Length: 68
Image: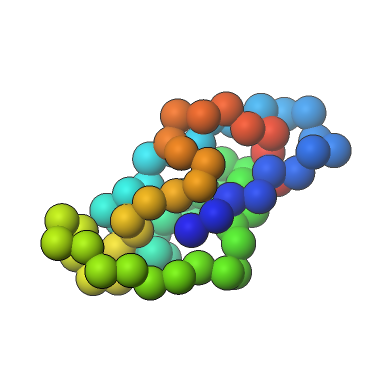
């Protein structure tokens, strides 16, 4: 899952940790923070994370980005 912050907007937000959430819940949380989620996601296998849940995000959780 990739997040695309908009450069034109000066409001900053910290990327929330949505790892291990369902894709739908993760997208809702990211969008509620003012972040735009890429439609270009990929599926990967993980022994630690349930199928249909987010394994990783970019940028990483905790990073401050410009909303968008």
